[in-house]
Amino acid sequence: MYELPESNLLDIKDSLKKILKFFKSRIFWSAGWRRFSLFVAGCIIIAVASVIALQFFPLQINSFLEKTNIARQASPNNINQAPVGEYKSDISYEQAIIDAAKKISPSVVSIVISKNVPIYEQQFTNPFGENSPFDLQIPQYVQKGTELQEVGAGSGFIVSADGLILTNKHVVSDKKAEYTVYTNEGEKYTAKVLALDPVQDLAVIRIQAKLPAQAGLTAQGVFKPVVLGDSSGIQTGQTVVAIGNALGQFTNTVSVGIVSGLGRTISASDQAGSFSETLEGIIQTDAAINSGNSGGPLVNLRGEVIGINTAMAQGAQSIGFAIPINAAKKDIEQVSSLNKIVYPFLGVRYVLVDEAVKQKYNLLADTGAFVVRGSNGESAITAGSAAEKSGIKENDVILEINGEKITKNNSMAKIIQKYSPGEKITLKVLRDSKEISVDVTLGERSS
Image (cartoon, rainbow, N blue to C red; front, side, top):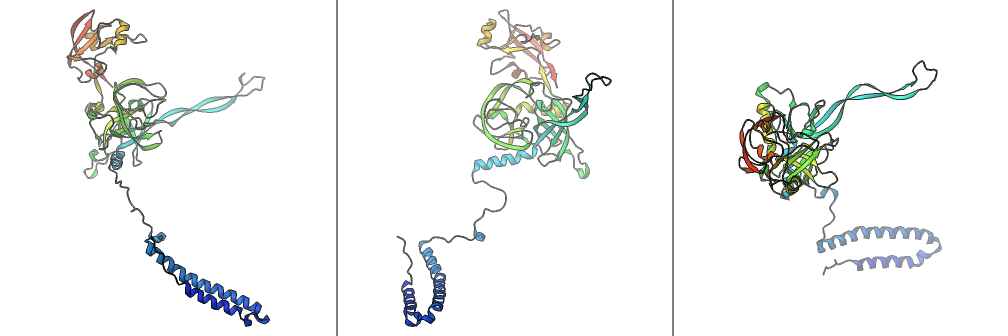
C-alpha cells in the first residue's frame, strides 16, 4: 500500500478559529465597523488562503511523489530526444534494406525521352474560299512547326566508370527521340544509344560528357558503377529491393518485396502496343514495379544487382518481372569491346512441343522444337540463314543440340545462346519419322 504524507491540518484549524472568533466579537459587528470590516476580512481570508496554498500544497505534493516514486513531469528543456543524425535501425533486416538502397541509389539514373512533336494553331477559314460570297468562318487546326517535348521516362543504372548505362530496350528504342540522363545528385547529361539487344529487352547507352583530364583524373573515376551479382543462385522467397523512376516523376523510388517465382516466360509489350516480344527465364517479384521503373535495378540485400526491372502484369497486384542480370553481363562485355551486341543465329521459327502441339500436328515427338510457319504466314526458315544453308526444313522437329535435349524448361533459344557466332553445332532432327543428324555453323544476329 502507498503511505500518504503527514499534514499540518491541526495548526491550520487553530489559525482559522482565531480569525472567526475575532469576526464574532462586538467590535467587528458594530455599525460603524461593519462595512469596512467585511472588506478587510475578505482580504485577510484571501491572503491567508494564498499563503497556505503556496506553502502547504507544493510541500504535500512533493512529499507524496517522493514516497510513491512517481517522477515529476519533465520540463520541455529536459525531454529526452533522439540523437540528431542519420537513422540507424536496431533491426538487422530493416538496416540491411536501408544499406542496400543507400549503396545502389547513387548509380541509378532517370532517363527522360524527348521528341520533336508538331505544334498546332487554331485558325478560322472560309470553306468556300476567300472570294466566296458566303461570309462563313470555321475553325481548323494548322501545324506551325515542331517543338521538343518530353514524351516519356524510364530508369537505368551505371555499369562502368566511363558512363555505360544498362536499361530496357523498350525505353530507348525510338531512333527519332533524344535521351537525357539525370543522376541521383541532379546532374544532367545527354546520352547516346549504343546497342539494342536483338533477343532480350535490354539496351546499353552511354553518357555523353566531357570527362576531366587534368591532374590525372580520367574516366575511370567519374561515375560510380553498381556491383553486379550472380542471378544463377537466386532463391524463391529471398528479399529484393526495386529502385527506379516511378511514374516518370518520383526518382529513386525504393520498393521492397520477395522473389515470387523463377524461370517465368512472358509476352511483354509497351503501353502503345508498338513493342512486343517473348521473354524467357524471367524473375517474378512482388516488389512494386510501376510505369517508369523499367530499366531500374532489382537488388539483393547485399546491394548487388541481380535483375533489371522490365514489366508488370496489367490487371494484377504485386506481380512484376525482371530480367536476370547474368543475361545482361555478356551484353555489357560486348558493347565495351565491340560496340555492339551479337547473338548466335540459327534462323528458324518454331514452337516448343507439348501435348497440345503434338496432338494438333500429329507429331511423333513428345518434346523438341517444331519448325513451323508463323500465324500470319511468315516463313519457317529465314532466307540465307544457317538453318537454310544446312538443309533444315519446315515441319522438322529439332530434338537436341549437341546432345542437349530441347524441352519446355530448356528451350532452343536458351541452349543456342550458350554458343558463339561461327561455332559449329550438331542437331538431332526428327524428319518423316526418322532421326537424322545435321551439322550447322551458327550465323550472327546483331543489334
